Length: 145
Image (cartoon, rainbow, N blue to C red; front, side, top):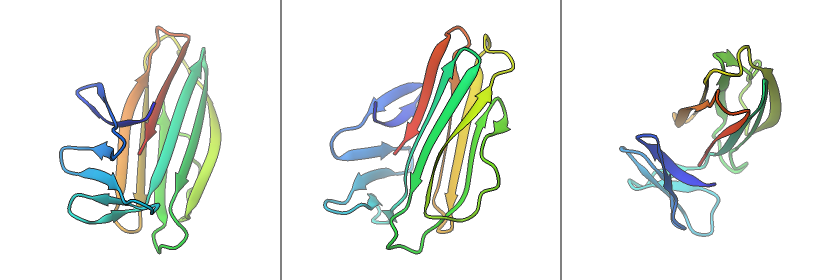
């Protein structure tokens, strides 16, 4: 499910035009372009999708981060943490970063924190946190813009 943001633990559904909401900024898609724009007019070209799935003790994390090739912007850092362990090995600056990582939970019956942080060389940043429910054998969390 695509969502604009989380506020007080609730998902706020995105409309066809609104892409992301935070107390500081609202992001809008620029028609006909792959870039995004804040209300103050700054362009945001980063696109990301992260999904972490739990199946008992097994966790699968899939990520897809992209910046258009026609910009000078690069991903400078990316961290994806499950149980406090960063699943991303050494990260070098790049335009596209996709992949799948696996992790085995030490105690699958307790809630597990999932966090991510992304930064570019142009001072754009995104981060988030959620949890995999320990009471459920199957659970997932997603982050996207």
